Length: 367
Image (cartoon, rainbow, N blue to C red; front, side):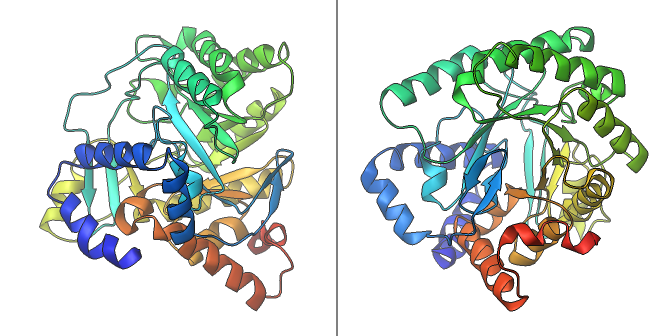
């Protein structure tokens, strides 16, 4: 199915605004993959190998999951396992409904193999997402893979009230995710990245862990970092988060930095404001993964995200310290077959290099 996507579907989507194309894709998947027949068909096309790994006390069939931002409202959760993902992250979700930033706010560049978005956490709000998820559970359509919820700060809430805002969303969604990711690093909500400071991090994490302490089960809470922080800042923030009971990190969010333009259309694309993802982000993401792994080792898991588009980039993230990995942009540029391509490639390399399982590869390049 990689060839039809590349030569039929993707060229067709190029004629649409990026956000409209994205919406059309998610809506189509949410309808087609909600029935067992659709899921069975997709499963047969996009079959992925078993590369089991235990993380957060859960067994993941392989390390590759869908990153946040693709399924903001958790409307297509039935599709992602059928496309071969072993886990998926929905959101970002905020406490209150938000329209997000003015359109256009999503852009793509084929020559850069990159996306820029300044969406601004557009979502129906935590209560609405909770209701959608509750209905899915009642109707017996809950996906059979681990789910993560990405939580952002509401735009109308200042940073002084951010801990309470995050905690309220966390509380509302607690029964409808296996893992929670605190997004304090999106570049598209004014002032949000100012939360990447030790005292702010402690307050946000403590607010959520205090909610968790009252619940049954200890669901892991992760912190998502910006790739634009310097090494010392990342490590000081990680230390503050660890002292407050964080269970892991996601490296990384999108970047506000820009590579040199490749041509005139690339220059126009790179002049857009917002967070850049895709191929140009990979090096920054690997740097952050490696810095974290060198500092914390196996204390908590690191999720690698940024420019994962091939078996080599996936191996690069895992061997530098990522236990699990995620992709987003590669799904836009290569289509669903990228999931099986990456996981099959990892499986082959595992055998060629003589590792017995994928867990052995985690951090191998940092030794």
